[in-house]
Length: 520
Image (cartoon, rainbow, N blue to C red):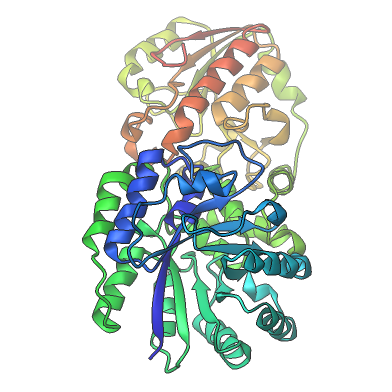
């Protein structure tokens, strides 16, 4: 059975969940707890020249900044950091000292492998333990991968990795790569594995490797609570438990659980990570998880929609996240099948409009809403739902998920955006033309309709059930079945952006809130 070491990457890979803003005290505490738990190797974060120094983040401009978070005694643990190829000039790396970190992990993509090998040599020459991390290892052909292994043998790193960047690696693929490495890699080099959990295979893949009948030393990456981008990583606490039970290890897991309880739970509540259907798709398509997160956070797409968008992407764009590219694909997908809306516009020019959103106030203040509609000559819209207390004139729907949730569809009243494909709908509007320039609410349904009505020269627009977002998700909608997950770290900005947009639109049309709203 293989000899196994564990490398915890919470402060580095986990940093994608909170922009590496752990706080100085928390960074020090996490490292200390991992030392106390007996973790063989602890990754403290990124070394990155292109960021501003901040003692509360696990992004470090220089080694001297990183040294400030190191414990006075590392016990038996080694401490390392990661450099992404191209983000730090290795020539500026100081010689390794007794007070410095022990090693550096260099992550690189296939296209950069030749230049990265030269950087690897420099890192080792400066006295650091070298960890070679060929990102998205599945992208290499067998011939390319064996050549990389042979190149690594010349450099002689401390560890050479198989990296499952997108959590898409099946057991058969992992073993195929492992046997190539085992056969061709120098015996003095440790074989590493870094897995993600898009398909929930990180633990099982790690267990398969640790159960191999091999004399090789293995190094398995994990993070506390599985903290990591998208679906997250192999859980340190789970893998420690496995190694204690099956491999004769004696990790003190209570120190890891303490880290979860006292530090990481708060980050999880603010910006959750873990398995999701969108992350499952990114794993099956072997695609960067940020693409899945971008589309999932829209809260407007079905799983089939996301799958369709992934299928439209060029293969060479899948490996590195390109936000502008996925925005263009997303908008192209939503903008299909348009029709002229001139007739609609003329029907409410110069009229007073009532928009009823699905916010909780539309339920709490329903008598006020209904009385207002009876006593005023208004054209009433409901927004992404059917308002059961009032027979509205139109139902505006821009969210595919909400559309599918409607048990009955009064087609004669429906005005939908171009992302909704239903031949029975009479009125379809260009999704992209209704969007605004604010990042988080660019395609918020209420703001899309409001912008459209203002552009249509409505005389006055009354808002009901347009409440803004509460940190308590149960307070956001007229019924709990409509509740969606919104990152708590985004709520303040979303409310701020909506207030600004409403204020901007108020310069062109009179807009007034009918029901209680934090946007007033």
